[in-house]
Amino acid sequence: MITPMRVFVLIFNANTENEGIHSIRVGDQNKILMFESEDDALRFALLLEAQDFPTPTVEMLDAEEIKEFCVSAGYEWEIVPTNSDLVLPPEMNVDETDWQVDAPEDDSFRSDLVPPAAPEMSDSELENIRRKLEGLL
Image (cartoon, rainbow, N blue to C red; front, side):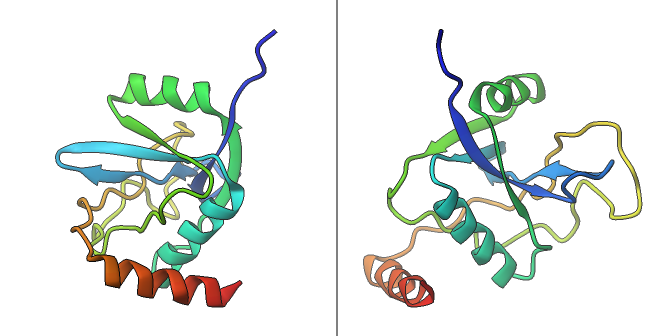
């Protein structure tokens, strides 16, 4: 029997009728990040929060369920390996999300945030951010 692969994703409005999953825009395609490490997902959530996003909840889900959702919605997905290079949220974000706090939806998986792809950062910028994040630990 194959054990399902568990991954961590960011959920907004968790456990409500209006919950949605965080996605990023890469070109003209939406992508959902699936983190192997809960710590990496939490760090990414903190970076989003620092960019004035609503506070996301990190939830463990079956990777196959996320992949099935992505196929049905026409989204891409990416598994972020544990201890891989630091994944940074895009600097620019959409002004409006696909969900409204007071508007319940039946669909439990939706693309909440669809920012454009992040511009490339220099190694020194990445190193500076890494040092700041390590200082938080």
